[in-house]
Image 1 (cartoon, protein in one colour):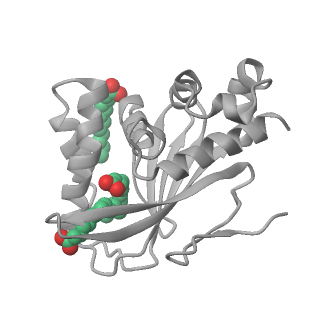
Image 2 (cartoon, helix red, strand yellow):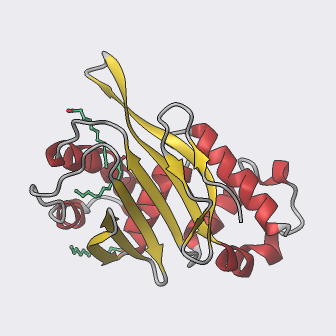
Length: 205
Ligand code: DAO
Ligand code: DAO
Ligand code: DAO
């Protein structure tokens, strides 16, 4: 019933609804600095959360909060990440020269630091099992769409252009991935704020 949201800088467009019930909560941009010299736009992303789940898990506790009370509210964020709420981060690649090798190494850096933060020392193996899913023959040209979905039971399912590439049951991994987008040091602060504001408004409906 509503229009897609388009990122003005990259032109990437995000449907307002994924599937039957995942609503778009915010969009943002993942940048990466190369050798400290320049920033490249790697992908645009949209964060989606299941409308029924957010009501089921969050409405009772937060339904009466205003948007400004939820903004930056650590407990709310914790509850969003901890509960079994189906969510998807949809990535739309904008960088045209992305190699699987650089995806793997960026992943080990960004997700690796979160696995360490939330899981402690020994997550090398988990990380390598996950990045070994990234086969060299995959192609991710500009315009590719990657879904990172947290499904029921903290299963992380990954697809590229609609083709499933892997699925892993790990609460720690789900949490670490979501933290990149809506955690304490998100890739795009504005996107995180939008997610909080929109969730607040969905909770009041
Ligand atoms: O070509 O070396 C280079 C720079 C590319 C940086 C790529 C960053 C990759 C970020 C992860 C993308 C995940 C889909
Ligand atoms: O931006 O640093 C980051 C992490 C993004 C997670 C990207 C996961 C990509 C998984 C699919 C790769 C398939 C080749
Ligand atoms: O949730 O605390 C945790 C850690 C669970 C580790 C599960 C690792 C599963 C890796 C499977 C890789 C399949 C490609």
